[in-house]
Length: 603
Image (cartoon, rainbow, N blue to C red; front, side, top):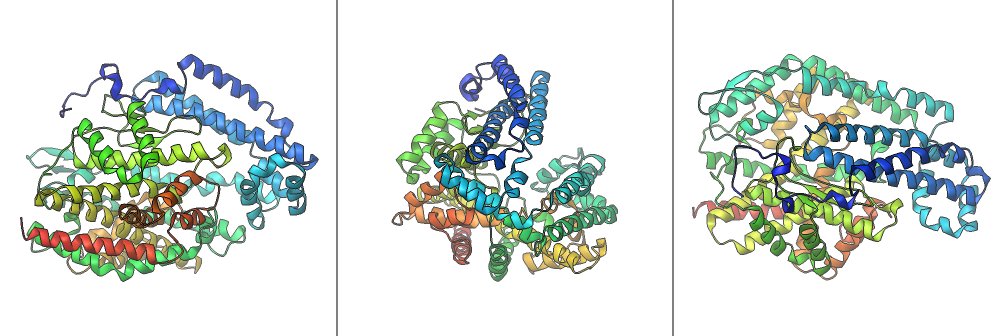
């Protein structure tokens, strides 16, 4: 599968390289039939509303109705969004996707009464229902999660008031998105061959990987020149967003916005603090890696725009899709027969949409619902990165398959806190495999550097964001104005602390806070770092064949939402309330940094 400059049309692709969506619906007509059936079923929602106090049977019937309509809309939505993503220029599937999204919103609106009505019942009444009706047993954890929120659910009038203000609370995030993605105009810079390049978010990332330093510098300075110009506006949107979440946390009787956010998954705040503490303790390792990058690039000064360009030249190893498929099947063998049977099914049963075509959504993902296959979208190019992407997305899909095969629908999904662990464990296993089987020093150096760069971007960088995000919420809660000057000065100091003396204090980087969309996601970003750390620990246990490690890991993949995420991970062998799993990840980073430094001397 060689690189091509002319993308094929969708209908020109070999069928074996596309996903088989007929396993969801045989055709669009079947989609329309199921869409109509669900639309009619939704009309029954009102008949269940207000019945939860009528006894255990009524309680059970209402629960099952709500879960049933969600289960059906998810299948419709998955089919529509996959069809749309395979060719976003196809107006038929644009419309299908829009219809599915509208119906999903209608489902949410039609059954939004469930949780408030459950919480209107006393604990005594709720649990007496479970004694009376054995069929309710399966829903105990599901209902317990609602009951646990009772202290933070307000009166019906107050809840209605907060719900009505939802658009107002989301306005700052929306303004940021429109300004950042639509209204900002970035300058034109000169490319590697003297051509003029219009800067954009996507182009910026590509240019920072350029081997021409003047191009990287121009892109970096050109981008931040625009953010500096709008720094006061971005400070205003970010400050208002944070004030909104601090207000809602206080209104719901939480101690802080962080407690409110983490309580959704019953994640102790100590998990967050431990991450920041351990990463800070090991910042000298990142400083050492920056020193090595400076040496490999052979520059007198290492700037922030030098942190993404390849330091080892062109990749010494490439994989066609067929080669990558074979390599993935070899590399993942330590995951055991049960795991590998699913991987083989994914390849054989056309879960994967492989190649790029005109109009296809960019990037890669794993997607599906309880009643569909866990499909994978790729845009294949013959690179080592794509091999890592393949095993990463396969990790998500196998996780989804095991969860849905072993849990009832009510627990047939998993939280974001757990999601990245399965995918990144696969990446770690692949790294171990390549380092064990590849003997060429250049290939080994490239794999090691790939790992270290991934670690830098996921653990160090995301923890830096997490530390700054919490700082902003705490300062606002204390009444400190989050002005652009205060945010920029604080972020600049934090960036210097993280990257250390080897990296120049470029004045532009202090405005980086203004362009990070994750700061509008409300304590989301720390999960990338905790997930990567947990995956590192789990991969090590599996690779070294630690007793019961594989069985425990498979139990995690099968657990879904049947227990709280931290408890699921404890059973898998990683206690995320303690520092040990992050310390283990740091030890692996240091080991691989040692090896890369030693290898460099041999090249």
